[in-house]
Length: 124
Image (cartoon, rainbow, N blue to C red; front, side, top):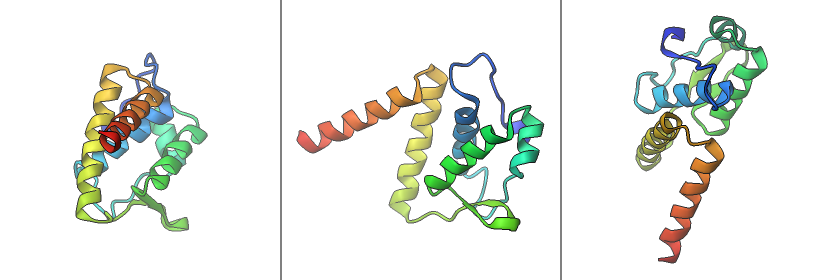
């Protein structure tokens, strides 16, 4: 798994966001199937040369987004999708996030662009 996650130390994107974004992309496109157990936080941090808190933050954000579930001593696993519409929208969001990262757009700006598009859709 760690061979699939790459941290660009020269990127303006924080390492936790790089980990979160890459894992979200793998979940979104099915490379990490529902029920797949993610590496332990300490192990992934060691493998990537990151601080434990960096990986823990990425996992917390994935959990907040409903992409993974933490099951105590049983680890963190990819969560089941909520419904087809949510799954399709999630895949689109993952693709958008990957493109924003590729272009070097800061996460706050990428989210602001989505909010503006949503606002335009409700008012136009």
